[in-house]
Image (cartoon, rainbow, N blue to C red; front, side, top):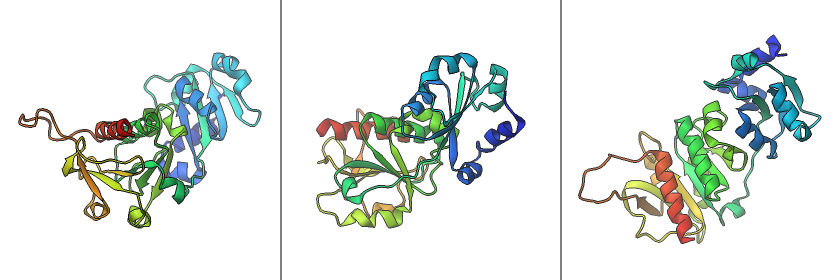
Length: 255
């Protein structure tokens, strides 16, 4: 049975300040919770219908608080239009990165991404293309926003999302040998003609303003995704997550 205190707590962590206060977040639905159970994330609470508990009993750890609730109770705490069997609360992990390892990998840099659906989709894209780390500017949307978690479709449990001051972070890599910083810009060169690399940073800018002027100074290679055919008027720009998918695909196609 769902207590009033538990209901109040769950509704509070739908807001960022309370997620930060309690260092937790939640995931909803069988698909997401299944991914969560298969991850290294620490689950603290699971609230679900009786049939889900019985189906997954052998996967539930003893330290996790399990609460059987009705579908009516599930609707009271769900952020989904159609609640789905199970609701889990997990601790936010403490993330770190190794600079030497990062220099040998391909990573994404996200400059002021505000839309939770876009961030969640970008995380899913990174997971698909084997990108292990995403570095977000501190003013980007919270990765544990319920809409981000939902849109990631479980990729959030495999890709590390770091929040950093990009003006302090990027200079650490600017002078690194054999390490390029790429950026997607309207005045960039055709990505299909440019020399890419198997490691480096790909900077993707905000949905409204693109990459900030200061961060542009760190870019070694400016990239542009051309429209086809070039002499025909098309959409003014691509959605940020769509552009990220195209860019990641081209990098992986080469390496």
